[in-house]
Image 1: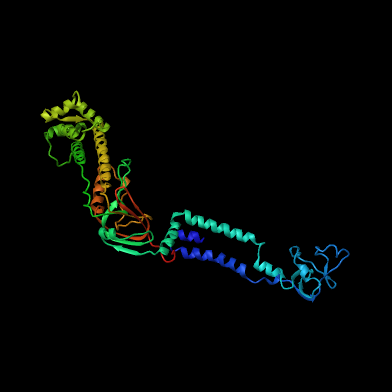
Image 2: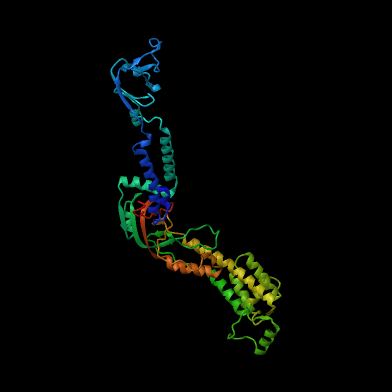
Length: 434
């Protein structure tokens, strides 16, 4: 229960320790209490000359069953046989119980002293304590949070110190050892862990702080995202025009189109050109979008449509779409732009993780946040498309150059291949835990 109290919250630690102390106190009382009255025996203290009697007494010198004190036949413990001969035929003090069992004889033989000083028959309790102690020591060594006190004990015996720094230069000059208490205040960057592009978005982890004298990283920006956003805006404005927008067609034609339920693309050339600017590679979403635009323009292939758009021959051409076709086109544009949004967000995240060599990475081994920032109102995984990059830009503005306060006991110091010193900090235990 004491072991569990080390893992429990601070409020529960005294109660668990108290509950653990109750059986411990009971066991100590049972071990050291005086013998109960019901276990006491009547002992007769005699003084006389023990003699060996019997028909074969002079031949059976090793027997201890034929010794008497006057008219009393004495019964000796079996293991006393080598030692009782020195008291025979001599006046001796002898203590016996009601069954004539000898419990003390002379100066050296005493069952009470044997039980008190040589409790060889009580090996069961000793074995239980040995196994329990080994189990607790194994848990202390194997379980990481509980191995901390063992590290600190060794470090404090060697002499630990408290280091307070407010600059990278001061931390460079300080001599740090495991077990020292470090208090660092300054401005750094929350850590971003890269996973080689397996997830589209990775938020900052402010339980670890990069701290160095290098120039802070720039905010993530991307021309590809700007082109994707321009295409998305152009298609949305044409598929869902605002009521007060300027119409490029006559009011009569607009009214007829509205009554027929059709949707008008009044600047088809602009959509083609913005698609060409975005789709510089052979991504599958772009190929599907390009094939759909070729069909709408009644063209032969995509290069021909792009050439006509650059030449201005598509200028002023209006395209009428059924609602189903408009939804399909909007879905293709959303899929193509979402592909580039996710790709550029991942690239921007990996770029943020490209830290300059040197400096320090201060990490809390309890995942305790080192920066006072309010928790996000929306989970990062709930953002999609362009919202992910906007959220990354917002976080970058806030966390690329943010004040931090890292305090704790140093539990590990390593240096990576870039020369960055990784310092793991553990919060100093409260007085109850310590």
